[in-house]
Image (tube, rainbow, N blue to C red; front, top):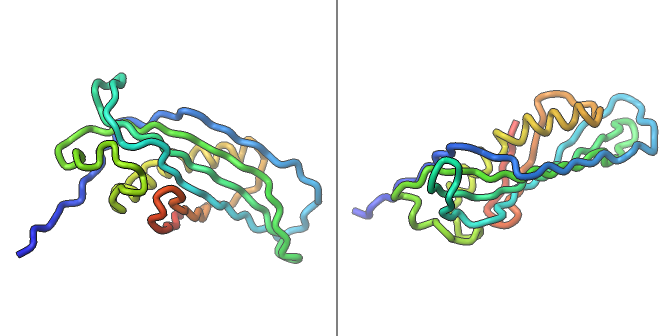
Length: 163
């Protein structure tokens, strides 16, 4: 019988925001209701999972980037208008354990799909509240829940949609 490999679980101890960049495109046209809000997102793994000294001791770290571009669509005309773009970079501190040893220092495109999915999940868990705050700050109309489409750019390992 073939040996079944367990999916390594990332125990993320802390997620630190490294940078936030957000810009609002000034409106050039007065939109007529009803208006639809669309958020297109991308996720990127910036560094390999690696050991580093952190404020929590020697742990594994990985940096990820979440980018969201917000469009407003005038339903009557079907025209899209880009209104905001935000990029948030995180450093995730992960508890090291034996099952993760084979993915340390591997490039993002060689990480198992399950690990990429977990990194997407933890990044979204931290990024979505920040995105909602940025939308409010920039006075972009938003109706919750936000549908966010994620594309794994660097790893090329599929797409995922979050509500």
